[in-house]
Length: 389
Image (cartoon, rainbow, N blue to C red; front, side, top):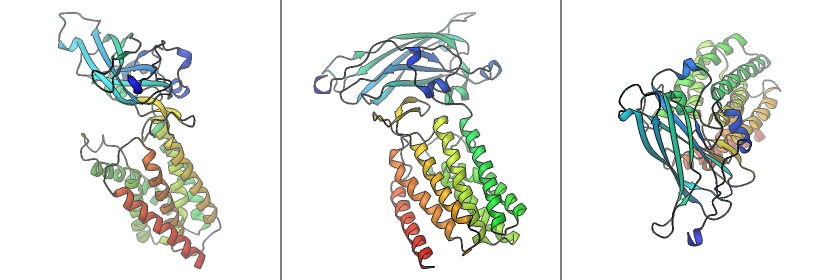
């Protein structure tokens, strides 16, 4: 391809070369250059609607410039009992517009819907697309084939190499338990009614999930689907939880400032644990990278070496949980909620600094800059007030 030439590896995929996270998240299906998305439960796999999930593996070029890869999947249903119809064959294409040389193993997962459920034979043909049409011939990648079954469509959409099913809800649930436990301890130290604070925290957690979905839907209006199918936003959860604590605390006669100061370490601890679920669950993924510091992970479509931004945000939240927790453990002080405001603003500031490392595009044009500036001002003001006081 001229100066943009890439030396594409065309050796077949070896099972023992699959990245560690992909081995953890792998289903019970075959190991090779082409795999079907599978699940161990036959009952769950047989539910409707059905889809065909396919993963094509290839090696990125060792050197050169970023390039595009296109893969054509051709499938035929094998368990026919009558005449072959439109739902018994398919030919679809999937593409990766930017593959980074030196990034190692890459897994491209594609889903085919609207076809007859059953046993399928699929052939995958990959090629490197020339950067300039007519300037070079496409480079052929290894051809692969596999035989497998369609599966339950929601599983096919969520599962991919490197994605551990159930990781996100498990981590979020563990984060809620850890946060509630820490908050109960801090509530007692601050002389607050532990039972009432615990009930407020439960209400804030439940309503926070609703707020997270509503916030996500309002900031992602172009995405299809209802509220139940929508993703969740941390901002929506935090805003809703704070409103519940303020309103509920006032109604229950709990000092709001002390309540919030006892809450922020717990909230940050929950975020630190929950973000681990994002990494293993394939959401909020970082940008692809060829750096040796990158970690192989997936966004449920492309598995490749990425910036581990979820782990970085988890570490940020964990550090702030430690700092605010140590301060809160000293017992009641000002009681004006300054620790809550400063700790939460510091988390928002760090989160905004990490956003450019995520592979998910921003939903607003100037929201990040405004939030970044506002959170920085709040952090500096909180530090100044604490020092002066």
